Length: 116
Image (cartoon, rainbow, N blue to C red; front, top):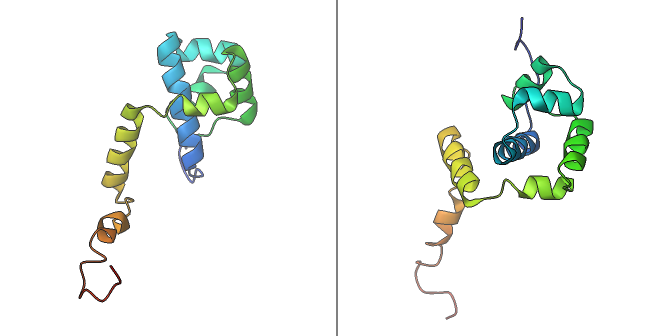
């Protein structure tokens, strides 16, 4: 019964996973090659590529060593404009986006009592 009662994948894990997918794309590395590189099974890797499970810290460490990156660099590699746009769209779909920023603009449209 795959997927029954599984723990949620954290936002941080999703960021890491997106970064790993991005690097795989840049480096033209397949899921199967990743599995070999970090000495894991194909099923293990596939479930992490698909965000069904979180990558283990040891996996991330191995990939960073192989790619000559620090974990910080790996995570920052996903912070392109494109992924930010995608993330914003996902948040809008999930209804997570805070509208406080929008409300702030109108905070001082009041009755003019605020000191100029």
